[in-house]
Amino acid sequence: MKGTLATGLLLIALAAAAVPAAGQKWTAPQTPWGHPDLQGLWTNATVTPFERPAELADKPVLTEQEAAEFEKRFAQARDADRRVGAGTDADVALAYNQFWYDRGTKVVGSRRTSLVMDPPDGKVPALTAEGQKLADARAAARRQSPADGPEDRPLAERCILWPTAGPPMIPVGYNNNYQIFQTPDHVAILIEMIHDVRIIPLGAQPHASPGIRQWLGDSRGRWEGNTLVVTTTNFTNKTNFRGSDANLRLTERFTRVSADTLNYEFTVDNPTAFTRPWTAAVPMTRTEGPLFEYACHEGNYGMTNLLKGARAAEQVTEGR
Amino acid sequence: MNLMGTKIIVALVGVGMLCAAASVRAHHAFAAEFDAQKPIKLEGTVTKVEWINPHAWIHIDVKRPDGTVEQWMIEGGTPNTLFRRGVTKTSLPIGTVIVVDGYKAKDGTLKGNGRDLTFKDGRKLFIGSTGTGAPNDPADTPR
Image 1: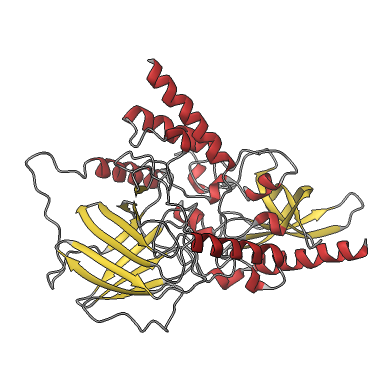
Image 2 (image 1 turned 90 degrees about the horizontal axis):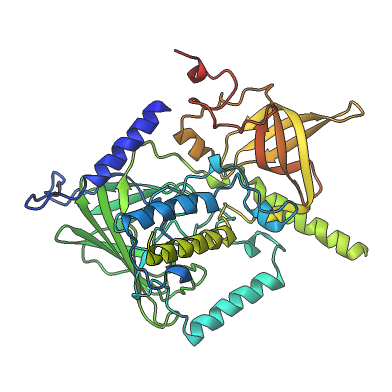
């Protein structure tokens, strides 16, 4: 444990030293075949919120002192050991002790107050009328049959897709770890959350035909200088990233800017769902292995339990 | 601290409240599986730990006042986070007595979520030691 702490401190120190001093130029490493080398284990765990909180509407960037205070307050607010009222759904929803979580403890290096960087207010843009209609229909379906069968439950509960595991990839309560592998013609990203490996062909070949729809979409990658640019289309209408629909065109940009920092940005371009395109920046930091398997279906007792719970609730209602 | 600084800190308190109000994303909706109206407090002996995903399950035998023994299953989080901190499958030995403060499953069976897992003396599992937090962990032995 001491070793882990020491390693953690070392990583923090390395992260702090990641930006070269003025006049020094950091040279991005290359693979033997001459591509920028992004390979290794990375984490995007951070306490920086996805959207800018209303309280910080006029504060896009924190000072160092404010950042330290934010980190402290965040740790207190998200401490799952804290009980939030016995006998309430909120207390049940905190689920379990803090030691099961791994959210990270630091704001992003830029000290921005949101991961969303465009629009400048740090908020996901409003849905279009069509996007709102789809969101309403999704909500109505959840109300109408919340747990008749597994198909009614969220994709994460079904171990199919986690809304943060990507694409695009954003931090969540645990399993914020990724491993990147490269070959001359492919990049693969192993994602600890859920189980997915994104296999991204490099080059100019076209996307799959519009009739082919996939949970993770269909990705194509290319190099622009030292940046890996990945464009993903062909999502399903059930792949819902903050209100997105099947027309989502996602562009991700990966740029290694130091030995231990991988800048990751993504742009959501989905005119049928959002009133404008929007972009988030989610820096990744090099982390230690191993990356553990999250074989979600291995023991998904929760699904059975909650469906049985719904049936038990029905019996109580019918018995009245 | 100047006025502006005070304002920011106040705002950050607000953010803290906001964070607290936001639901914690576990793998599934815990409030769909467990009943807030059925709190449980159990003292039991660990008989098996399933270090599985998406959630670990701790099996305990709970002796009732009438002498009968109930077999309960308690849901935890992903083992991955604990593995990363050095916890191993032997870190919660069979026979350990633990206290579970949580909520019973809505399906009425002997399952619960371990909202708060402690040893009998109140120490939380897996933390509070230089090692795994488990009793008699070699890492806790003074060197």
